Structure formats: C-alpha cells, structure tokens
Amino acid sequence: MTQAILLVGGQGTRLRPLTISTPKPMLPVAGFPCTEHQIARAREAGIDRIVLGTSYRAEVFEDYFSTRDLGVEIVYAVETEPLGTGGAIRNAAQYLTCDPDEPVVIFNGDVLTGLDIDGLVSKWRTAHADVALYLTRVADPRAFGLVPTDSDGQVIAFTEKPTTPEEIVTDQINAGCYVFRRSVIDRIPAGRVVSVERETFPELLDTNANVIGVVDDGYWLDLGNPLAFAQGSRDLVRGLAPTPLLSGRTGEAVIDSSAQVDPSASIIGGSYIGANVVIGAHAVIDGSIVYDGARLESHSHVSDSIIGVNAFVGSGCVITQAVIAEDVHLGSRNEILAGVRIFPNAQIADSTIRFSSDR
Ligand code: GTP
Image (cartoon, rainbow, N blue to C red; front, side, top):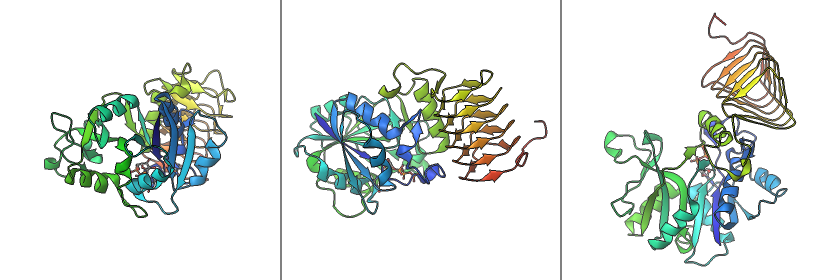
C-alpha cells in the first residue's frame, strides 16, 4: 500500500471572498470539498494513509473529516506558520510510516484530475526515479511552472511562471502531483519555508537526481480562480472530471434532495444545487454552483457563477461569471457581470447595479 501527502494549507487568495471562512480545498465542488474528491480517488488507487498538510484554517479539515469514514487513515500535520509547499511536504513526512525507499504520492489540494495515480507510481518504480512529476499540456502556460523533458522523459529544467517568450520552451506544465522517494523528502530542510517548485526541484536537478516527467493528457483543471472553480464543479456534475463520489448521479445537474426548485425553473449546464436551496419560478441556473441555504427568486438568471451559503438573490437578477458570497442580500433586478465579486453580508438594494438599458 502507498502513502500520500495532500497539501491543503494555502490561503487561496485568488478565490476570495469564498476563502475568507473556508479554505479553498474545503469549498464544495459538485457538493463535496475538493479534498474529499481527491481522497476518494487516492483510495481507489490503493492509497491507505494520507497526511493532510494544513495551515490556513486547519481546524476546518479536522472538523469535517473526523465525522466521515472515507476508508483511508487521515493524519493531520498542522503548520503554525505556513511553510510553503516544500516545507509542508517535509513537515508532513514525520507522520509517514513507510520505509526510506518507498514511494510517497504528493497532491496539491486544489486540482481536479483524471490522472492514473497507480500508473505514475509504476513509472516512478520502473525508472528507479527519485521523483516522478505529473505533467499536463496547456495552450497558454504563462501562469504555470514549465517542465521540459528530454526524449527519455528526464526533466531538464523548471521555469516557474515564465515571463519572456524565450522562457516558453514547452507546453508541459507541473500539474501538481508528484511521487517522491521517501528519503528524498527527508533531505528537504526542516523548520523553514521552502518552495518545492522554486527550491527543491531545481536543487534536485543541480545534484543530478533522477527526476522524470510523466505527461498525462487526461482531465486536468487548476481550481485557483472563481471561473475555473465553477467550471470544475460543472465538469464533475457532468461526469467529465472523474470522481467516485458522484457515481450514478452525473448529468445536467445535481440537486440536493432538500432543495425546493419550482417546476418552471431550469437547472442546466452541470449546475450544482445545495441543501435547503430555494429556486423560484422561471429562474434559470446554468453551469453554476448554488451553495446551501441560498434563495433565488423568480426570473433570476445565473450562469457560470457561484452563489454563497444563505445568499438571497431577488427576482429578475442577472448574474454572469460572478461570485456572490455568503449572506449577501441582492435586491431585485440587479445585473452582476463577469469578474464581479460581492463580499459576505453586503446588502444591495433593488435595481442598484445595471449595465444595460434593454433589460
Ligand atoms: P492562491 O493564494 O490563490 O495562489 O492559492 P494557494 O494559497 O492555494 O496557493 P497555490 O495554489 O500556489 O498552492 C498550491 C497548493 O499548495 C494548494 O493546495 C495549497 O493549499 C498548498 N499550499 C500552498 N502553500 C502552502 C503552505 O505553506 N503550507 C501547506 N500545508 N500547503 C500549502
């Protein structure tokens, strides 16, 4: 059996205001925290012990997972001060029980993937690698860490977030999952901030370690910003992103059994509707997440957006590619367009925000 570390201690600043009260990996996507989807997939791949490297709002993880049996042993490695990705891996390793030559699978806590986890471990084994990195290809790699490989799959460089055209030497990026030989983790400096991307990986190359890249062209999505987050949820709901947690329930929408949806409303495009949500007549919810306890009045039209816990959306509102945080009260006939984020508890009167005269 293989052991794993899941990195879930980041602040999730790009997802604010949703991450003010809930850490990003614990925000539900298609009804379950991203962390829970990842644990379920790891379990399917035969992983039986997972160390969660927590820091920001660490208590939220323990409160949630202590009430669930996911068939995996979960251990918490809490950082009182965030140690960065490499420091977190080093800190979590004290809770591993495997031998120095055994593989440890490490996951970033905010990516959805269809990665063949077992396959990555097998390739690590066959190559006698120190580290195997899961790579994916993207059209625009500028926001990511580039990882070019040679014809044998050996990693030749790490370039974090390239800025000049000369730096963009490949479309292969670090997809946020690695297999480390346990003894390699033990060489990361302890007790200080370390970035695995900027410090550990370049150092491994400098010391001629055996670092291989494994390109997997299956499903991959970084849930870092609100648009991607809503997309991840709808891909899970539609069954495009694999998760054992929704088996048999995927389709145009997943609607919690306690939600009250008016028969004339349309819930489409991979939307997720949470517990105790109320949706009024002729509302259209398309490709969106509506969190628990929210209420959307008649003729509201929500697309590619996230509606927070207990938010109220008045009749005739149009919300497109936006975030309405928890406990917001949005009066009738407001129009909230792309990129807008309304912070928790905001009170917006009727017809206050409008962008066109024809609605
Ligand atoms: P942004 O602030 O929006 O960039 O998000 P983030 O804080 O999650 O940072 P990033 O996406 O770069 O982090 C990648 C993964 O590493 C995420 O799963 C984070 O939770 C995790 N992570 C980042 N920094 C730390 C840390 O200091 N400690 C731990 N335990 N995990 C971390």
